[in-house]
Image (cartoon, rainbow, N blue to C red; front, side, top):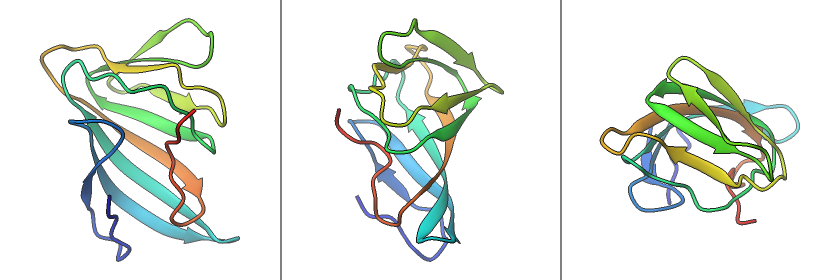
Amino acid sequence: MVERTDGQASAQQAGFAGVTRKVLERLPMPGNQELMVVEVTYPPGGVAPLHRHPVAGAVYIVEGVAESAYGGDEPRQYRAGETLQDRADLPHSLFRNCDPERPLRFLTIYVLEPGRSYTLEP
């Protein structure tokens, strides 16, 4: 996976087959941090493997319907125009594209150290 550091958008694979990430913005922040805005597209019916995030992030659903749950929480659906919060250091036990025919597209916004991955194995 290669991300460009010159502020230009880049497309890349992330997590599992068919998922693409496009870095829309990468801004330096104080304390050796970066603000990242990333467009993510899941294929029809795509389901993320169990994972976690090292920091909290905001997710804005651009197109489609996502279903998400952390730990033992009940799954909840999020539609285009809605937001959800990625929770730090908790197992992201479910994240999926609810539509078997159309992609799910969303923006993820987070602040993290340069080069550190936002999606980690449990």
